[in-house]
Image (cartoon, rainbow, N blue to C red; front, side, top):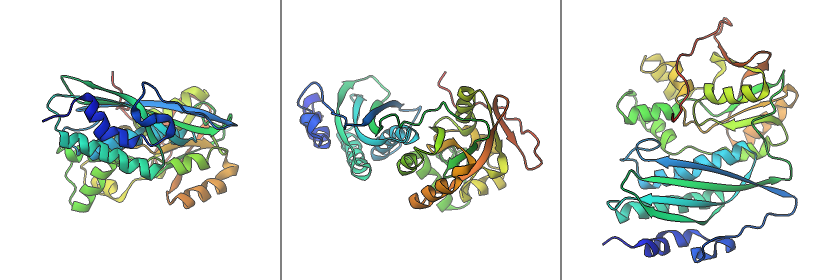
Length: 324
């Protein structure tokens, strides 16, 4: 028998509300007192079944992805996480086992990333399943990295590798079939369980001139930095880091480079910084165990240019992901 609304909250979600300000989810609101000398950073993302995750995705992974995509936004701001608010829209057919797994996934990542559930809401829906999460973090006063600030002469950097998550979705949908089982598993892992680059975000807070996380594809998200700077981000295609599974799929003709650069769901950071701070950026990446790669520079012009090894422009026809 399915639990009612309040029993469900008490059973699955109250145990996640460990912060004093959450009051065990027994009140209509929570409180959060910022530390002296710090600003709060707030971000919100939603996930809908069939759009952001597949019906067959494990509940634990859906919960962890929901939390992590929001933490990725905090990472791009240079913020350390404090807590989050959560809204869940369940269908009448959602199994209790699925809800329990969802809460278990949240618990695991709360412990990993050091934050707590503060409150939220739970409602019924005819479907599909949908969730909304608001993450709250902190930065030293005036220290948030914005999207606005890239300067002429800055270099462009990305963390990790690009295109794996889009390939992982293609694998799950049967559009791509890697020859190696470990490649298949690695790509699905990147789609279902992105890793927010929190340590790097905090580390580059005093070095980056602009940053954002790559949710809708490198080309489109780099375009946001270019637009706000009134400059052009000129990227070198052969410098963009790809994983070994992605390179194998590319060499086998199972995917085109365009898909990797526009597919989205990478949740890596793309940021700009002055060439003089390259040593500090390299050190931050090494400390975090994550490769940070220079992929281009900020030049006069507008938009994003992608160049091949002969410095000729590669035309990208696809746009990065947009809901509408």
